[in-house]
Length: 443
Ligand code: NAD
Image (cartoon, rainbow, N blue to C red; front, top):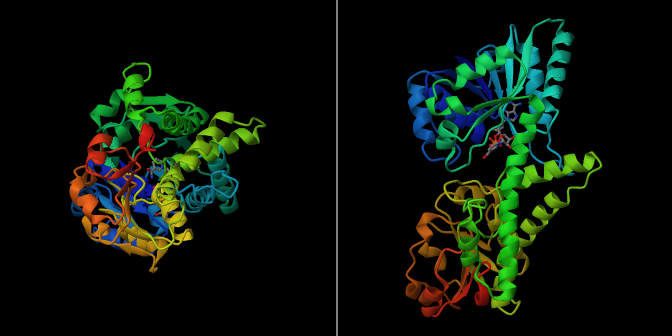
């Protein structure tokens, strides 16, 4: 099948590389000419395990192409995937300008029947807007061409994106057209593991499914963080509570890890967008607002714990950070808890010395050169001359720690663990003051 993908970010690149890898002929287009020129050389601008190898292999095989030429891209594929960003607008709603710009581009250049596939996360009703935009652009050209628009939301996780795309729990397709159903079945047919996981539904339900899934996951995180907050104040240990509740199959262990709040490009923006949709309908979503408020409070906890450890005087202190990315196995720092912490530390007159296995370049891009930020090349280098250590991301490389070495390296032996990686008794036995999330007397 010939497939075009608009947007060469996380979702577009993973989709393009995976579909090419199973034998489809794929063209990826992006408006960022630099990005496309790097991609043509097999250089991938994001860190996603396995992605660069997959892209290089399929470039060499001639099944994956990159371009900035809109006419070429539109006239390449029967399927036109839209995988561009839908960032939050100031009021929290999803900004659809990139999606609708792609719709105009398709309307402007198409010469025959196309199936437009919305893969970006978009509010209910967007497929109708895409359809109307293409129809309007065609009519301005005086062209009468048939096309269909369907919804195929993406559920991949950064850090495990290829596995998720190829072996996901389900593929949701929103359409009422038999022709589209046949084409989408053909598109996903090479993935034998996905064959019985294709779920067809109407377009609006598919659009809402994506938001409902992310809102549910964000709710689970805020729920456990709310209980962690309570645990801290009543002298209970959230990790024991987590075991206690997770063993109930109705609850389960997935996604109930307490921490320093969710970040990334999806949960924060999708919860906001769904709240905005509810508000627009005259229905305040008390639950979604609370999920967001709890997350906001949780992101501030790392700083609060440090402030408490240093009697609310962080002026002139140097704080080591392990982990900048919003989660392991990615270099993505969008809405990462590390950013909330760093910005609060700088406001309080402290310096940051940070290490992340993958996100240093992204951090430099976001914050530039500044005297109160040092990015180190090794984990333990970040400890040199530091007063305290904060763990913001649960990278594997942070799990094995010699606490005696850590205690000796830090001027004040303070460890704030935003991911509950360690056994409190072991850490305390080494003479460190241990501040974890929701773990009783460690506060
Ligand atoms: P991204 O910001 O990484 O990439 C978007 C790309 O689209 C950029 O390279 C940008 O230059 C390009 N673009 C913008 N306008 C364009 C245009 N008119 N033509 C061609 N390219 C254009 O975004 P992402 O993280 O890949 O997310 C894309 C969509 O998928 C969003 O709606 C997001 O919510 C959704 N999504 C993301 C994830 C994730 O984990 N990142 C998971 C599931 C769904």
